[in-house]
Image (cartoon, rainbow, N blue to C red; front, top):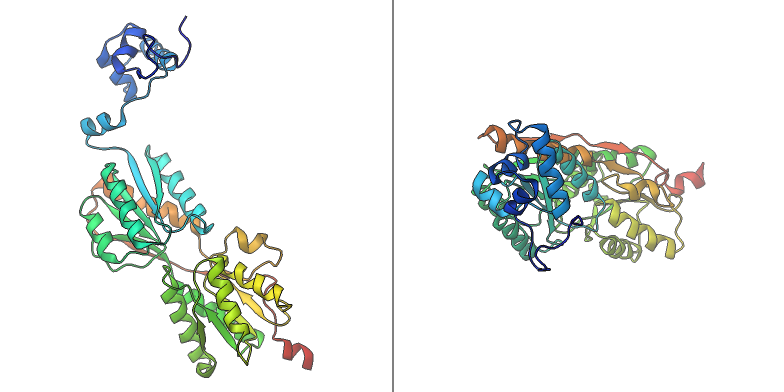
Length: 350
């Protein structure tokens, strides 16, 4: 009796082939191919014999050869901006659920927020003959997404794009930032600062939304946008800069939850109470916002749904040959938790 997955003919480097499976099962090579394609033209007994041979030999179909025959890989490539940001974990989960349900697989790579590395990551996925490409909050300009879309259907998720051949799924970041300012003004804050996301996707509309809403509330003289980034280090640097100023803000809107955690750590080290001395708001509503010891007020993005929608747009173009371009803009929602409250002076004077 052969042992499952054992090597053939004493050669540890030899992988079983479709012909080996056919010989083991006592059927033709073409019948094995039908079973591998899940054809309904195979009897139950023959299918069982082939699958038992596959298990015994540890056979794995040659994906490259199958791609050449079918002119389709049934693989969607996903390039993620930053694997350290928990925002993307939920986006990827949504993508994976949607493509798996459709009989596809997702392959993941990252550029770690570096444009040149993103270019290499995209090139690698295209070389693997993926059927579609999802770019999650890329740092690259639209021209690179347009170039990729000439080869395969391409969707950008988490970043607005005006590319005429590229679909997108984004949150209304400008509106989300305005909701933050509205909330803080309603609590009585006027000295509201913003730690921006640097070159990160979504940084510009969030900063624009903050500044526009401050002007709408007559607080243009209080606008303070401080350089930061979509990382803990970016939030730490931005908050340290604000604390070094002569007049401190009573509230700070940080560009995302990951950066907000860095900002909270700096406030804690400086002995500042949140929200008593300074209120803090993040963006994304990731697990960090609800799980940190200071439960964070933040703007919710439906991350899992965004991933599913992005995958759905890709599959429409692959399976249905859709030629139009679709841009999905989702409405944000403010989630109020413990990190915001009335400004300290109002509490003291009451």
